[in-house]
Image (cartoon, rainbow, N blue to C red):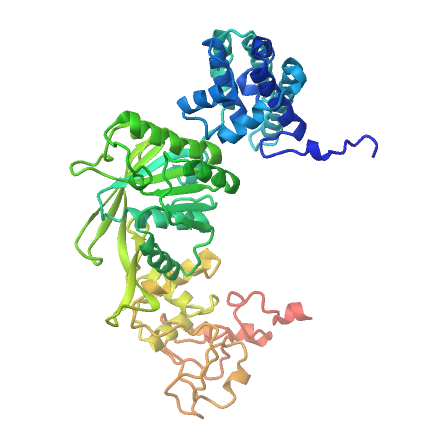
Length: 599
């Protein structure tokens, strides 16, 4: 194990991929340049701002370079003022962190530490190259030689980055240019909810006040948290943070109603019931908390409540709010989803248009109707930057009564949940073959039953159907190869008898010893029969030939000594019975009762 490098405490990696030594090197570069600005040109020859692993260090370095280029004094105070002008002081770690960096003199050799920072940046780039090559090589559609393009792109980028270190701002900008082939290496949008919401994006839901926007978003959040498909749209499960800046007291009822309706707990959804202001210092605390939590979806309910005092009609002021929302997105890689009101007229978000340009997706929610029984909620796709907008999505409302909760006057506490009008289960018309399949499934009827037994079963249940429809139903069950129901019990008429599957058979009168004599039969003696009397066989739906022991064309009676099949209870051919068979071969081919195989 001598060839294994053991990490010392100062070498442990932090969330940015840095070791303790890498972080110290970055601090020594910046601190050394603050103490002695004459080193800034030399450091610029070695590294550029993107070489810093910590975003805060890159912000401070750019502010430091601006002070140097404009001939301003470089001190911790001037650096703080410049960061405040750029509205980046908090993102750079705050005043205390800026002062702390200024204390790192680096032994007066910032160029030496700059080489260390550059080497660490190049190692990170090589590690990223390796990861991309491995991902390409193990992809399902991988082909030999495709990963070579990553290597060519890496070498070209390194050449351009070296040119950017010359200190010429134009060279640095040119180093960031991408050719068409390099675009394939950029990550694509990762779906969160179908083609509607994506990770690492800024989306928005807008609509008039009181038009069910929050109900739609709670439903979305709950499905992302639990991983359940959202009304026909695939969902990538992840943690959700719901910032309840408006209507916090009513959120509990909506959550409990959703849980009762779906029969599951609303897991992985966290609520923050207070309006954190986007332009206040607490927003940076929120960003840091979310960076640690790494949620998949962050809901802001509502945009207006987290931007109090902002002039909504000013593109400049609203643009700052949008930028702060984008800071939250960049720090977490989540889909940030604010809720916003529309104006008094039209379907556009209230205020300036600056926000919409930054959005990946925008949805308009509205309702029609005056009570829960006739309200229709429509969600219209107003914008999809990189996908087609798609059709509208419509919902009805279902009233849910909360268990054990009552108002002061004794009335139960209720809330509502959304039910899709676009993905409703298909209602089957009673009397059709498909309906009979669902009814047989619901009552647990054995899939091996033939037409005669099902005809008798239908007669006992009071179901009147033609022989052709019954046979079609049996063909559907046989071709399906399983007993998965075509429809849920909720789609059957409410006056049907309850299911009998997995229930003990009820004691009914019948011929003594009948079940022992016919152990294969799963039909107990029928109701209304008198014990001791033989069971009257139901009439065959089609005339049976004389050879098979039925009525011939002339209507002769079946011989009374003809044995019956123990599966379908119809006569077995005489020559077949004399060989010892007690079933039709087609009724039970795996029974094991055939004498030829038993011997």
